[in-house]
Length: 351
Image (cartoon, rainbow, N blue to C red; front, side):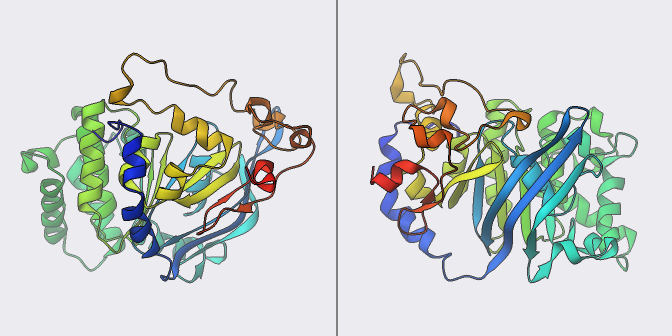
């Protein structure tokens, strides 16, 4: 199953293979560019940033993992791309997002409708929150197809929906088309969400913790399904807290902590040469079959509240290598070579 590796040495043994694989994306134009994105929320306790000056790119056909603990701002970053941040209380306060040559923040609501679902599809962590409890599965799938292809006859849309349910491994398709979401298991609901996300042939799939509510066996099946069904030219942004999953699913990794990206690089760089102490902590917390009864290492403390971000490096309170400077200044990104960057003062000292 993808969440557990036999031993950590396996990561290093595959480094040269994945370095060649990662290089294939460097010459491709960016499909998605996120530049200096900041998002704030206003609550009774005050106004605070949940995404702070985040920038990254995703190239055509590339799968990128956005990882970090709960509360780091991963989901809000993902929801900002198709402009799904609820306003109020959320507000995109600065930055820009470009998708396939179009500036997302400049599009009208009607223009956004053509992108959402068709060019950019989302797989949510709670399928019941995305599926209507009042309508049968078949009706929801048919309406999704015809919303973007208005000239498609209903019978053709129905046939396409049935075909896709079969493709994602759902048995008794004709019966399931007439079922309500609550009549199906969590794993089956998520398979339906995958079918709905893929059946329009999107350029970009955003998968936000797509297996959170599922058991480990079903998680492995769902991730294998996404990987097998995704077209080689389709890009993916995978939101997760599980480093084992990004090892299996992604070519490049963005590590997020307390609303900011703290490290980014290819899969091989992040797993074999992690530079930021937070990334190192996440990797040390991965269980291995070879570990036996050895206690897993954890990261002391917890992610700070957006209402109480510390001055300077936001990881300083939990870092074993903290210096006086860390509490005063925010570290810039340091170049670690081969498009690998990390925001840590230790890199200035060559550590």
